Length: 176
Image (cartoon, rainbow, N blue to C red; front, side, top):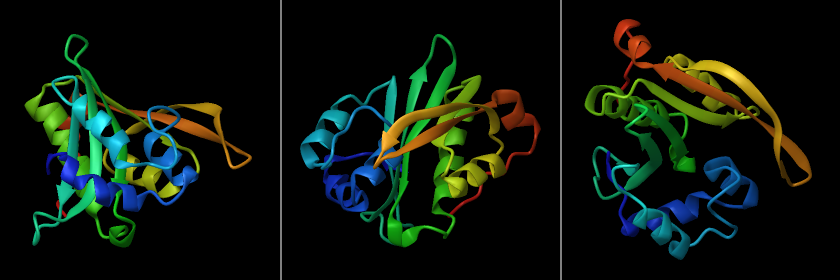
């Protein structure tokens, strides 16, 4: 896992193949279809202590992006929010998402000392929901029908994990 670089933009753009995929990745704010390098450059320019943006690379080819994630941090409240998790479509189902989220959990809890790590995931994304639960996140509630995409309303599940759950529960931190 390394900081996102604008050279990673073409890969990210290629992974988002339509408006629904864009919303699935970025939620209802921040980006418009079609996703392009200019939007990612503006996003990347916001990186700093309050917004960490990462690229996860192939273990054998460190120049090849295979996943992406961001972490919005509120140091005063000791909270953070995992967002914009995306795995290369051809690499899904191989443990990369678990490795990426585990790495972000380690940074948030062990390096940054956050108390609470939250995230939102669309309810119909059952693979991601199951992954987050397997990695120790707890469902907090559902925001019903938060966005309309292609004529269908999508609901969002709010999930979180607390530092004591990370440190005390033996949460798994898989590698790729």
